[in-house]
Image (cartoon, rainbow, N blue to C red):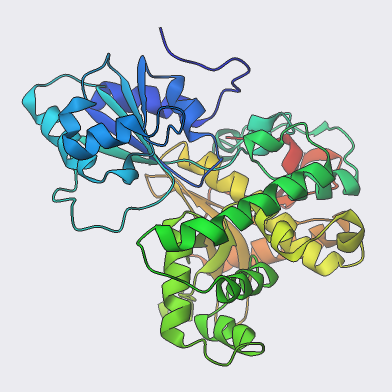
Length: 422
């Protein structure tokens, strides 16, 4: 019997967890706090150790610090929650996996990458590392899932009318985010919850991750700079200039260190550039786009609500792009693929998202909030198709307000984000 919590919503990663527990001795589920790692792990576990259990005065953590074998003795699969609090657990589990050929013995969950010299082995072949994200619109029940990425790759999409989506509802989905705790909350409640999350990170995690004291105000300014530049190619120099408008002692090394901490806490991540064979490979941009792991974080940092975003449609477009690319990343990773972006330096042609399968087949996607930009987006995709030597399997415009799933005469699909699934 698993320890599944009442009210648990199935996650896309559940199937991958089941598969990897049959292949590996242990798995490690990693991702930002509050994204649902523990509840998902409990859905597959038969026993659990909570290292952050305050109710028993952290007794299990103290036992692990004395000898990790004292906690690695429960029914399989055994969940070790927030294992990074005692990094020696990693090597202990790796050793336990070497003792026999039993699969699915341990599930680790962690919301930070431990900065330590106490881990001596990568765990390769024994421990499978899995990245977990916040909930996609399909997981939260806000997408009908009428079209899947697999349908697009197989050219198996039929024209159909879809539900009408209100702009204010899309803004609500961005502000609410994909945090399981926020599902069903109002916009105001969601914003308060996410701002509390940010404050906890600032007041506790940014220094406790490696016992290095960091300036909360500097980190807050770096977060604001990242939020203002969400879904763009922003350099560390730009972030440093933003911070130094208010504090002229933020050096490049400081910015690099603080960004590294945010990455280790799984709060930000890069959308890497796509390498495609063009007539001239030197034309392909090599700079990553920066994202928060959930667009709600940018809204919380900048204190944005529906009214403010309705008055800044340009920035709203970037946040909508972030929402779509969060979902695309979740969907393509379900197949073992990756999400990229594309830029042609010589012409300035940009493609918002490239989804690539493990076999190298890929699709090109433009993201537009309103229907007034669909024609422009389709033309960009067709220009990209002409440039690429290896042609994409499909071209698609993901829209916010379009009320139909269609395949245009030029072969470009138009699909509402609230109709897409993995």
